[in-house]
Length: 72
Length: 485
Image (cartoon, rainbow over all chains, first blue to last red; front, side, top):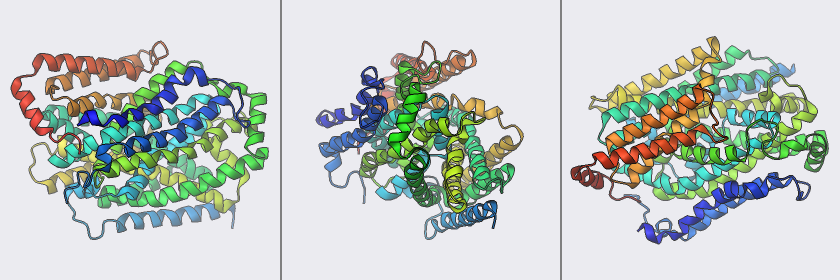
């Protein structure tokens, strides 16, 4: 059952952005629309996290399942 | 009317509304233990969203975000990182916890530990240690609320009175309405917070700097170092940022108040949907963080940096809106504080005082009693010994995160035994406390909680391997099916 939930690897996206991305992102330049790069990178992370979780859910066989564990 | 009178009146009216709203939520519900402590496991997507948003984005986190932004700059972005990680982990682990608790009728972290490992000792241990780390948080919310209310009523409401009001309001609805009361009050809280933060976020930069462009331009000119790690701090660098993200995101999913909200969900799907939508709330956090940094330009040399956001707002807005900000701040303290008291109460009522009590009605009474006492203790400390417990709160998150290996490994691996769980948990706590007491946290730049987690896991797995019998495995396996609802 666990093997078929391959889309859950997408849940690692925030960790990649916020941890693996650190050495590349911890700079002031380039400015993006006047925003320092590290601050912009945080915004990227904040916006991409829900998108990644949504994609994970979209392809998660347990998410689409009927009843979803509800007993009634 | 004077500014103080206008703001105080608005504040008092909203506090009365809050109590009314909280009490109304319980109408037509069964007064049993699971209704009180986990809302009868009946929260839909919307109510779960407001409740979790209400619990996570606290008065302390807004003031603290602005305060850290003011003191250090970019290191405060760790809040984005660990919450994002926590939401992602919550998608997977939330339903796991929910399914196990639902199958066995469990209502708290310690309840689950005690049941999974069939060990009352573990339940007592988890409840005790978690309580020690959580009470400082209750106090932080009380003092945070005092600060907001005192400032935003222009001193109209005295600090100690503000503490007492937060205690009375929180206890009055949590004792009667339980978790559902908090969820309802969260509706009021989240709407005032979202409204005021958006208005502050748009107007304050415009008022002082002509917009965000001007804000960044001026800060880049005078304080460019605040925009990268380690900012103005001596040691909050990338290693600290990364390790804290890992520790706190694991801590987030087992934090007893978040855990209680998970258990309150109607279905596994509710939790998964919630993980998709809750992260959007984070965008609001940019406001206190950036304005905290910008306050360096407007109100330099603040004595208490936690006042950064409030000081800017008082300068920019008329009294009635300042009063509304005070309401948003007060509710942001009351909701998490009430839930902290509730989860401590529930742990004691089930896992410590109610350990040999069969009747759920008695367990609920005991839980309510402890919920009340915890508030009293935190109130007394707030008034009489304000800095004593706060020192402990620095490692609260690291300490509570030590629950993660017990619960996560426990639900994923049937080979985990009671002796392994107890040994690992104690070892993790000891590591965290020793590093903190001897002044070695962070150690080599890495969050002390991470060392705790590693030792915790290694000891837990090693002891379990050594002690597991085939009967343990068989019984654990039976309790754990079905694993993923």
